[in-house]
Amino acid sequence: MSVARHRIVNVLRDRGQQVRADWVERELPERVDLHEHVGLLAILRLDPADLVDASSL
Image (cartoon, rainbow, N blue to C red; front, side, top):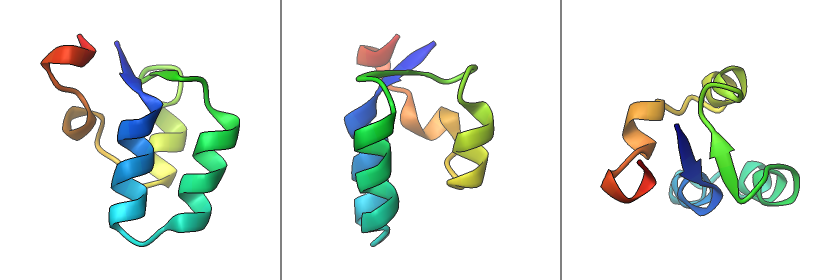
């Protein structure tokens, strides 16, 4: 399962984490595989279930 990178970036920006959002924009692919990047999502304190919507499936 994957999610659009911009969803991750938007959550981080909403939290005021601009530097992390900028890094994600530079380093991650446009479609982020949630299983492959589960460790990074944990570091960023993002729950994959919160990032997925019907259009991401």
